[in-house]
Length: 161
Length: 161
DNA sequence: GTAATTGCAAAGGATTTGCAACAGT
DNA sequence: ACTGTTGCAAATCCTTTGCAATTAC
Image (cartoon, rainbow over all chains, first blue to last red; front, side, top):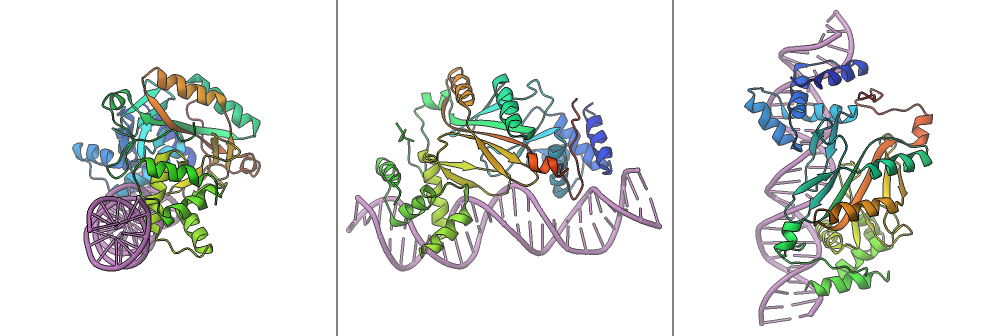
């Protein structure tokens, strides 16, 4: 059991929500992974542990985890969401996403955090979480001569220059 | 007709794609709006113009517009996408999104652009577009005592502090 | 003319929801 | 005991796709 489960239990209690076995197991799967997990990934992991938990419960638990701030929700444009807990080596980080091969590279940026605080403060906004995603072509795909494509066609243009 | 349509035509020709009436009208709707348009919004606008264009065509056209870089795709967590052309008063901008009332506030940040270039250059990545979204509570919702909610319940906690 | 697009409706895929049985407090 | 959750399947919602008719080049 991940020690972070404690934080989740605490959150649930503070919210007056029952701490159920299902919620704990689902959270444990997420806290024990360093990946960007899809609901399907989580389901598979649960199956691997011999847990029989309905997909609806996974969705419902992920919603709570995201609200709690313990887990981040990502949408990398794949048509479904991915989840990642916030206790990895990279506490807060941003993403570089290759639109060709879907490779995701993470990086940290103190500047972004500063921007987040400044922009929020200036407007009386209370920031809870953020995401910076930079889309483009990774070095491998550029080397392979790949460009962006639509129905088999190629190459985005810098129309604005 | 928005002057930006020209850029779209140019893009289509460069890609060897037919410049159809439908594509032009859909693009015109987007270029003439300063909003974050959903597919439904676009459909309604077209209907208002008396255009009878299938939803599938709108989706297909938006895909091309996004690839061209003339239009940005957003996902504000509503379960569907929104689109915004890149010729507004705010050429490139970031978003503050209230998780309670869904209000979206835009702001510009040269620092984010610098981070984008630096982080990309450092990894041989070729950036095409990016998005920075900061989620939290707007000043109004804070004033109203609103917090984040789940199934009618309240209040997120700073579990990490 | 040829190749690609359009529009419709059907299909697809992720997520949500209704409800009876069940678990947490 | 009471209230909220779970699990299943059905429903929902956005988006994609197949295909015959149509349009761009």
